[in-house]
View 1 (cartoon, protein in one colour):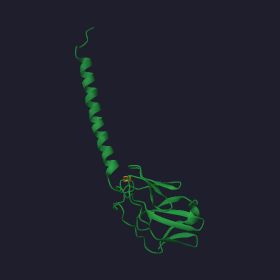
View 2: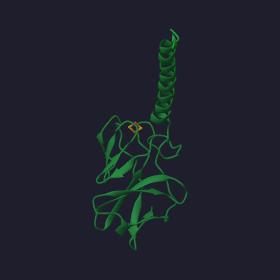
View 3: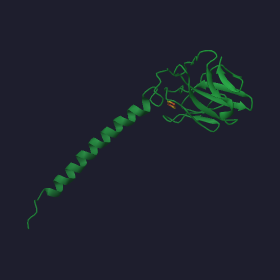
Length: 152
Ligand code: FES
């Protein structure tokens, strides 16, 4: 039986070529997912812009939010916000759009974490706990009426 003299070399070249193409493709995907504004939330809001849900719109049931924590809410007019519960009877709300490059932050206990570059915000105040974001999440005026968190 005879083996082709370059068959092993050809296989290695193919593997290297396939690997390089795969790396380029993966790099492209990572670049898009890390930098596209609103990628995580489908929101085209700019960093630092303040959502303005219609006054009186019901946003959440206060009892559904653990005291000291927060929940992500899409308003009736499709704005991404965070509603938190600082105390048993009060609520606060913030834009869910990271002030760094506009990804959507996610509640985790008393924090809001940005999946794109790792910024961390206080879920009860919107203040930055860790960068790269250097501005707090804009607050959204809310009140508690009859156990519901309402805009305005
Ligand atoms: S978009 Fe960069 S940390 Fe949030």
